[in-house]
Image (tube, protein in one colour):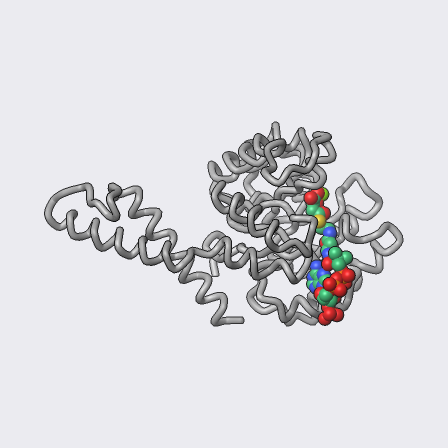
Length: 286
Ligand SMILES: CC(C)(COP(=O)(O)OP(=O)(O)OC[C@H]1O[C@@H](n2cnc3c(N)ncnc32)[C@H](O)[C@@H]1OP(=O)(O)O)[C@@H](O)C(=O)NCCC(=O)NCCSC(=O)C[C@H](O)C(=O)O
Ligand SMILES: [Mg+2]
């Protein structure tokens, strides 16, 4: 499936040092996996985790789940070895932490070659340079790093995430302008599925493609929130049918449920149906 067209509702982090979690992920209904060599792995496990991950990916069994490897930064003792290793791992993309500028992306690309790159957007400098980072020719996706961002901005946690909205908005603008995938940050309280559902809905309303997750218990909530609902699909079909009808009569505006439907609404309706179909294909292949 084309990288842009496939679903990214649920993007699960797995510490590359945790063999049991690497095994379990082969059975979880996630759209994508971030195999993490960075923050989820302690310093004394970094080299071993890289080897564990190489074996897990060589063994396979992840089906059509999108495989993302998050390396350590090139300014750390492990970054270069991670970047060299990821070339051989068969990952779909490499995820670079704490990207501050397009120059950071160039430095990784000099090692990883033509492998598509995703950026962790999680520093104030990254926010200010979001447009140039998104425009890098190898850039294919943004992941919001809301924990690091909150730390750097010295914000307090609020359920409505108001202190982060400027940053989320800047990254969304940059990603959408360049046609990138963009997934929202994690919800740390992994046992609080109600709180997660509220945050997923906010992310979905803002235009994110999906949510990064830290625990299997979060997967179903994200899969539901970021999929078109039955109501969305029904409305999309009715909008297309109504528009086709008026269009055949030489008119450019239909009315459905008391609201106007023009060309642009039909384009959105078609995107909703395409997304629903891509999810069905993904599920059928799992
Ligand atoms: C949070 C955890 C440490 C909890 O682990 P644990 O106590 O083992 O949870 P459970 O006993 O409830 O686990 C139940 C089963 O699920 C498996 N499991 C747990 N987590 C995962 C996972 N992430 N992927 C796959 N499978 C998982 C367990 O193995 C159990 O399986 P079974 O044996 O069959 O019962 C743990 O969930 C965890 O480590 N999560 C990931 C944390 C992480 O990746 N953090 C870094 C990413 S967040 C971040 O850095 C974002 C960004 O950079 C930012 O700045 O915001
Ligand atoms: Mg981070």
